[in-house]
Length: 531
Image 1: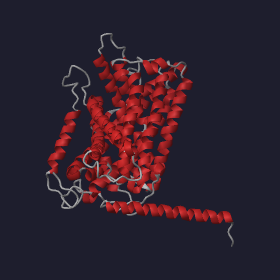
Image 2: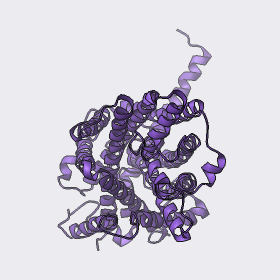
Image 3: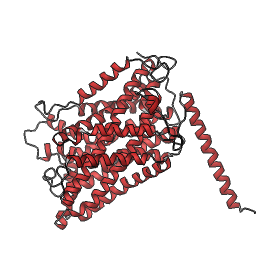
Image 4: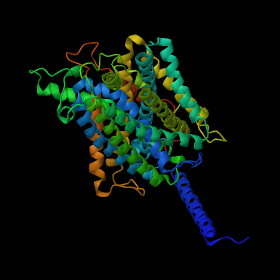
């Protein structure tokens, strides 16, 4: 049967595209071979899925929704608006630097793998430290976002239905988020890709819907002067006349911590690089798009919240129990209709976004654990590096990530230390991830300055200045998260995060001198010699 010219053209185009993709995939696999790795995944992800993994982990609805409280407590609108813009620009510097590195070294494992290749003779040790910081930071991130989901559900039950939750019920809700995320990740990669794409839609459409909903329902709105020009004191109170410039700077810096917590996880695109077609080009752009999209969508949500505040002084004392985002939406409905029952739709959007955030976070966790086990960085590495033969998914690494997040989250759910421990987990996950970003970037700027082989994406003459701005951001954010909660410093206000990170670093260093495998990322030559 004769075919039409149009049919022949379509067929020829399909063959050309398929052969181009296969050729590109072959070149990516050849690059992995040069890096001493074996391709063990199917390349079923494209640029948009790779972008979606990072974007869903950043999840403006989840992290801004929870982090807004920290900004409001510290200095009100000033930290929320201006702090977010400053941090988003600095986070983009890290994103650009990471994109340049992953273009030349596209492998699961991301930062720790880069540190090995960029660290010169110190590569194995730096890789070891980077890997453990990144691993603990990622597991803490999953625990933190699952705890955010637990907060959303508890707040909805209290505000909408008047049902308080017990500690056991809170634990059950927390476990449910982890189990749902684990089960979705256990599906074949194409189903995971669809859930990631749905997560992108939920976070973008959800923010637009919530902002339009609040703006339409609210009987009145705050002024631009309030949103962009108001600096409040601790806990949203007016600043006392005697407040010094030093105190104001400290409050603003603490408020910026919210934004730092938001911009975490964009290394996740690198962790799925072995499943991404054209990884050396697609993954760099995925990282950059994730940071850019999150900065825009998150900023829109922040403006929507600030412009629709009905009562600035009940945000921490209303029925939402200190969940300021929920309280703003409740106040909007109460001001219009006399009841806050209508917020159930808003809460459902937040809960859905958080579920997909946990799913994406576990996806990245599982790939990082797989890679770390592949390079013999974990106890029982031979077991956890296993990849399923049918779905080509690291199932064992996935459920280890679920178990780790479960253990990490247990103290958060203890009622008497909930806020303290939750803040500590956020601090540890933020600093752990930030440090793991900073080490390979610093290595590229110093040790491997003249030897790093660039990939298709690079920053050219701007590479160094962007890299040093990224290092500056890592240092500043580490300092901010190490500040005491308040002054004078007492046992209850002392920030124990630096101590926790010091213990992790000490543990990494001590364990480095334990017997190592004879071959692998952390071996002596032929890779690189340890300290």
